[in-house]
Length: 457
Image 1 (cartoon, helix red, strand yellow):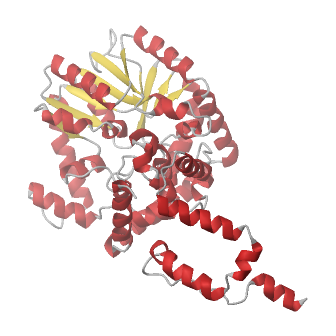
Image 2 (cartoon, rainbow, N blue to C red):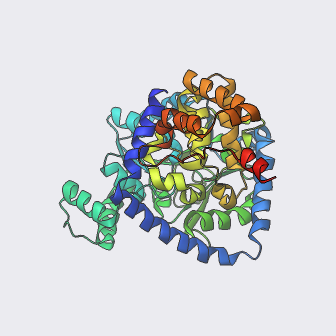
């Protein structure tokens, strides 16, 4: 078992038995489920809506090169600049060059899990540049010195009391502050930062090929503020974020909102088509889009796994996953956690080191039932497991035990010869560590079913 796998196992057990964590996550998940149930009422035929969006994303991943080139052509027509980055290091290097060229002292950021993927904050701060997250959840975890816990709700693991205590320690606000007070406090703090920032950095929910634009979905307006005042806007996006047409948003936006937060539609949906044009009164003087590969081409080249690139980052699979709800977001040691994270992380961060994430899937299929683009997530977990075996990444003891198990289970005579006593001994000897110290092993009958059946006949 590798270092990451051992850490995953230890952290999983620790978090699963943390009662405070379970209570906080359970409370937040209940609120999410109620909201989604109400939001689903807007759809007359939810399966038809999912089919439509799934078809759009299928079209994209099967013609990705064409749509990326179309996006670049149309975006640059309006004065935007596109930078292609093969990996995180290349993306960071280009972003730092832009910041230094513009003598940036303050950067405001909003709506970008992709920048978390490439660990951008660390490199920006190492250059002595102030770097501020402006989305409330992201700001809370930044103040706490943590990373986002969830791809949609970054501070889901914190209760309102946790946040009040954190702000009391960092800013001296009252320890019994209400969420409304703390939200107002952060709003006032950020207003000054927006107007003095040199560069705004965002992600993008979608890159629109036919008009060359970046579409950003949010509920707080911080992405709009982060791009209206600074002289430069940098959007950092994975290459899979492309959609063919602006008209596709008609289908995608409602599903993203409902599955992500339970809303009919998100509060702010903005389309950025480039830098400020003549006659416009706000917006950046320069706009860059960083198109990040970072392992995505590897997924795209695999016909069995490319389906994972259809993900629109709504977070529904995380919210429904019984494993995620028990072991939490940090256990995965990845920006992308839960079912979709367990599938793509091995291909983004190293298959041998992170193949254990797909082993943690229970195959309950809840994630596939709720995915708005109908990704067959359980099947992709099984494919990852098979590939790990084919590449020889499983440890020797596991391979030997599975070989023995297969031999016994495929041979009725051997199965009957090894009576209940031998089977119980084998289970106690080899199964206790796998089954876990807190659960009783099942007791196997002395007589097999086939023997009982024969005696009855």
